[in-house]
Length: 477
Image: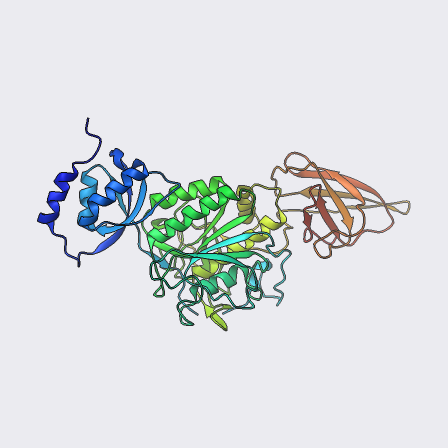
């Protein structure tokens, strides 16, 4: 039985095919397929040795997808590899998902218009890491302070991760600012890690993207408990099986993935990473809660978020930008807030909570066939998610308070919550609890609290694991 491809025959082909240096090279993923040679590193080395004369340029052997090589090569070389039993797939061409063009960070923390001028949020994303797969970043800005945990450059131009392209190319900076900037960001205390996969012209390299995802997976295996979100503000036409395989592994290990629905006014299911079921895919809404015409749409979109004429941090000054590149990091930052305040819940349930808590039925205009009518909400988790329903019964100078508690209808890892009078302060409930409410398995409970001479104006809720819902606070009465 022949274990390896007939390499001598292929070497003879080199002279007859004579691929010119000008032959157009594309990015491909090469898998072992029916050929056993690529299933280990030694086999990969032989593969590269014999196909290099035909124009194959190796870029990355993916550690977490054994037998998978990312490479550049002309189409004819890819065809020859396929003839030898390799599974060869052309990578989609990826594009950054922003156009350029403002409105405040005000909309997402309230249910309805008009804007109230208040951009406050209940949490800050502290303790959460956001990976930004993008271009180079302006690091020495007050917008980020000391919260940039580092960066990795996956390109071969030698320019590095930080401030390599000048003030005219600020895509990564505006994205990071929207996710976790001090002034413009949703999660102003989250840490950022920049992974440079885009050059100064905005071109994203598929081998770089896959290498970055591969490295995040390796990082996660070494850091299993650190809350993590990946922001991918780009889109490419077509499927990407290697990317999807890495997404599945990251999702299984609790890394939350966010991507842009794209700016082509097209069905997001036709693009990657937007088509992946493991990612939260975000479309564009404008200041009037309308779907922006250029936003991607369809069943692969999970929700809409502000993304038209948004002010964020550019190079050394604020900049106005538009596109799903901005919508995605607003959602990534919101997931960081949820991970901070709900460490007891599995990340998959945090992702579901994001969608459950979104404002429903408010996005106007042509949503596009199959799109959900959900708008990002990153304000206090109350109303539909957690209800404190008060009923007051007078009787002999006393009140009986019946309090209903629902934590998203989600099973909780703790059996009780403690209730405090008054709002929280600095992320902590104040004083001592006036009651302990026993929760059912689904996180719901109804409890009768007796003995009030007057109703408390606010409630603060704390789980047994000291998770404080400092905005699960609602006026009673």
